[in-house]
Picture 1 (cartoon, protein in one colour):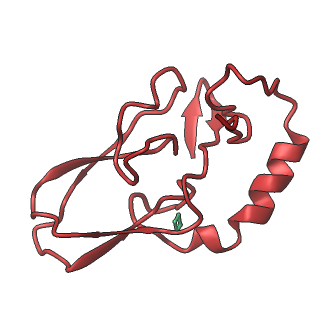
Picture 2 (cartoon, rainbow, N blue to C red):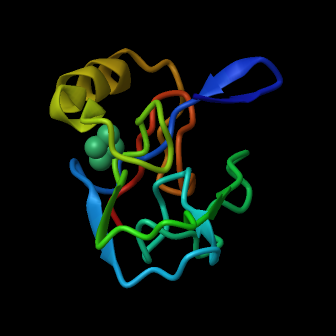
Picture 3 (cartoon, rainbow, N blue to C red):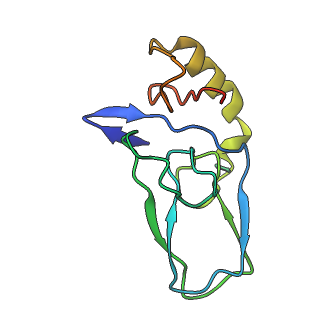
Length: 120
Ligand code: FES
């Protein structure tokens, strides 16, 4: 979990499941989206600006795989890889968002207290 000034930051859930990435070249440097706001999942498109999140720099391993299952829910504990955390995530996310004391106003792009994003 990301932290900013000692507080946990909760990302938005881009998708409750992994992105299957193919044709990645060994040693290529990629920026994996941590905030969940990118429109180019699982990669960063700069949408994290102002949220406190930064992308994860990931180097494609030397020994290539045909397919990489990369986390798109953003709650994996072994980023950027999917670890199946997404399976039980919807209940946790809903509960946290219901309990969030943050101000959910339409002008905020992400509530990092619970991962809520407004519908645009
Ligand atoms: S998509 Fe995030 S753990 Fe599977």
